[in-house]
Image (cartoon, rainbow, N blue to C red; front, side, top):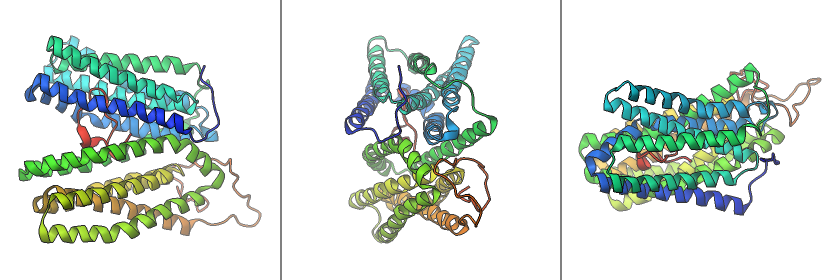
Length: 454
């Protein structure tokens, strides 16, 4: 039976087991991709990779949007009826897309359509799995997370073995993976359902959850777009050497960024609990401290990198240094964004808007820097993208603090239990505060271009 436990940071042993489970899964995932490439050759592997890569945003929307929304809202007093809502959201897209894929398959649709339909069901299933294991973690069953991803690692390895023996094609592999993911998702749901509070949330609470999912999911999806744009620019200029170096740098940095994103997921319920006690002003102050340090250290360094790229062009040394700076800025900006996203709806809008600004600036700078400095230029564009995210969020905090007023005489002070999620479009002065890439699944092959979040 799954127990409800107090919202506190998981112990070191629990965190180590969870990180080990995700780490083993990711290692098997990358190894399996190389195995499929070797067995199939580039042509068949490209059919597999393009299908899963094209629909990777579905996983980002669920794993980044619904999971983070569940962790932000369920621990609050008004979120007690939300677990079943998020559980249905986790499996609903998978069920619909799987049935759609089967319908196209039975109707004898074009091979490309059935392949993309299978990839859509697969990526939605992986995203839904992230939501379900998050619901388990909220109820104290942390190890279900590690066991699930170890199971996925085994499935991926087994599928590669099947390909080695039978030489089945990309669509057949996707079909096997969809079947496995559907079984895992609905198995997790069956084990969880009876332990969730009965009933459904009121309409305003459900709408708040839906808006939170969209905002947080948008931020996650946009985080992957910047890198995709840079790859497109490399393709446009025909810089294959720069593309390879850029891919390698992101592959290395994704180890840090994915681990950090997952750790933030683990501490998110405890962060919400602290915000309920301390209030939004304390959250704004904490995020501002992180962002001030980020801008103070990041801006001069970014200018130096830009000048070096403009004068000397790209190079391996400059690319490595720029990547180290970008990792630091990514970690800091993500930490501040998580604090803001868990304060209120405005914080989630700020996070999504900052991700959009990130895309715009990286696209503009990349248009100039990729031809001029190759991989180093692409990474420097990402550095400035993180800085504009940080600067925008810091400016929004400053505006919120200026608008915030203390309760007037005779007006009751807010209590620690007062909900912080009401009034998603709030404009009152009493409450003015109202990544990157996806979690790759067993069939996702988009690589480090979209692997900057857990």
